[in-house]
Length: 302
Ligand SMILES: Nc1ncnc2c1ncn2[C@@H]1O[C@H](COP(=O)(O)OP(=O)(O)OP(=O)(O)O)[C@@H](O)[C@H]1O
Ligand SMILES: [Mg+2]
Image (cartoon, rainbow, N blue to C red; front, side, top):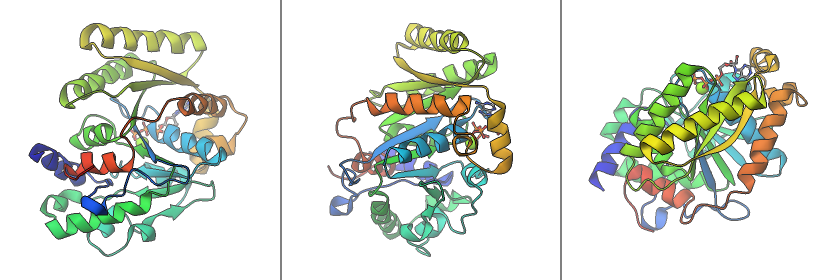
């Protein structure tokens, strides 16, 4: 437990949001409209493989199904999510932790039917959070409980914050491209997840982005699945692929999500297929906001 608290501190150092729960303050197991909040972390070994684009467009696809979705931009450094959505958050989690703003104040609506929460930069001071601040922050996390889905766009690589988010989430999606360096790094992050996360029992899901064909996607996913099962004894599920699509880069330049800029494009239809698959995944037992907060903050009751 103590080392979880330690982890949390590390996490916060790198920004992001975590929930938490302290006794009755816990944002209970999600209180999304129709039940639990499902938390999905999107991670990758190599940078620039498409995490942010995939996170936002998955979120939009869920929103189109009538879900309430929040994208948590945990990649504070480059603040990707805002850039792609063309919005500039004035406040972020740092202000919540410092009690300058409430969580409600910093949740941003977008014109695409999804909400975003900006992580915080300069989070090194989080390590110095007082118990009171920590409790206050945990309470604020409740404000995220109205969501059906929270998608966490993490930074590339295996920083402790990424590991903490992956551990706390109900589902973790690893993104790679067909490039050998990206595949190697995907293997690397899966290896670290499998060795660093205690009680690792989560099914990891794989998305192969920027493929030129379905066959290429299958080949890449088979490679990752084979090496992880052979060398790590870990099961990775193939969630799907996204075609390499010039429309993605054009959309990014317009600061629009590609599924809005080009809804019938090749990339957008791949996203829809994956959301349909994700919808069929049973909710994780004991998952949701309560668990998320407990895992991040290393404390708290059921
Ligand atoms: N399916 C795709 N087809 C074509 N280009 C793509 C595709 N996905 C991503 N890209 C290109 O890759 C760039 C990086 O994507 P994105 O910012 O989503 O990656 P990331 O993994 O979030 O990066 P970082 O690690 O820096 O956070 C995009 O701006 C776009 O130009
Ligand atoms: Mg990104």
